[in-house]
Image (tube, rainbow, N blue to C red):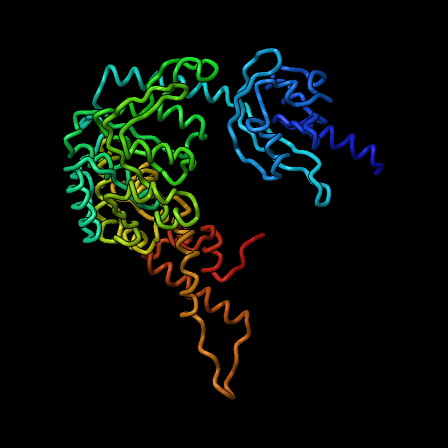
Amino acid sequence: MPISETAEMLQAILGAIDEGIHVVDANGITIFYNHVAARLDGLTPEEVLGKPLLEVFPSLDKESSTLLRVIENGEPIYNQPQTYTNWKGMRVETINTTLPVRVGKRLVGAVEVAKDIRKLKELSERLLDLQAKVSKTKRTRQADSDGVSYHFDDIITANAAMIQVKERARRAARTSSPVLIYGETGTGKELFVQSIHQASMRSGKPFIAQNCAALPSSLLESLLFGTTKGSFTGADDRPGLFELADGGTLFLDELNSMPLDLQAKLLRVLQDGQIRRIGSGKSTQVDVRVIAAVNEPPQEAVKRGGMRTDLYYRINVVSFEIPPLRKRKEDIDLLTRHFIDKYNRQFHMEVRGVSEQVKQLFQRYDWPGNVRELEHVIEAAMNMVEGDVIQLEHLPQHLPERLHQDRGPAVSAWLPQPAEDGGERRTLPEVLQKIEERMIADALKETDGNILRAAKLLGIPRQTLQYKLSGRSPKR
């Protein structure tokens, strides 16, 4: 393909991408500028192409322009919020990823991919407004009757390690020190956090939870610390979550997903109790207990750079780890009964429990989604059950299938012993046939001869199992 056609194709591809693409040469002159970038900047491509960057965007300089910084130092910049004004006076807000462009070892320019964050900013502002209104009308979130808040009595366990964690958390509720909780997804971290809040002297004050992985850096910052009028387009004077939680508890989930620059600001709040709204030069004193949770060992988060070392030592005053469900098997029956009772009330049903086969399956399963997965499995089964006992066929299909896959190593126990010297050796088809017969026999024994449940346990259609039992091959 001729070079001219290749260049035209590249231009067409870049022009069709639904993100702003802005390319400058080593002198900061724009050499490519697609229509999306023009729309974000409130300009036309003709007003930008062939012109120096700082001429079109006079509010920028070599330090504040991500494109010029990359040209200067040759280092990429990822997901950098940028606010600037074009030559018409229009204020622009984007999140940019800017990369150096090299030919061989020579830096010849930079390319920037820009995303519009104005819609997200607007949604963030609306959320702040809503939270401010809720804070004014209802300063406490005690909701024992509707299940919004939890107490330590709601933590169901017979596991010794879990009982110890529960007791440590109960003691931590007496103070206002920061708390760091580690637990896999679905282990019930927020249940512990709310229980600590309800058992503390702050129980009559606000409890606010925020997932740090749910929003990009710039929006999370405004959500946590608030905004002042004019700090960005459409911004008004609004309190952030720290101000809304004043006197109470702020729960920061997935703290290890919070950008490092925000972690530095959080560290300052933990040290002196003062916050500063975006765009304001005034600091405000707040009294907030911060409880944070991570879904990976905190030491590993620090090691990989996901958590600042100084923040870890400051927030790790009180810490504990919630064991996963696979390490507290004695709790499975208790939790199963609890969730059945819960959905009996919600669905107006009278399910008594689960079959012995289901109990055995629950004990063998590794529960990667922990307590949350167990609850979802019970809820799904309650939608399928016809009598008053949950059977294997009422469970979500992935459960027996995954268990069947995880039992792979046990197949070695079914293999015939190697023939001794001079003895008769079996062919591969003969060995496979024996393994299949043994697996089918075990599945039928486990399900008391129920073909449908045995087929689900084996991960094959019922008709296929019937054919195998009758000694025929299934139709294809």
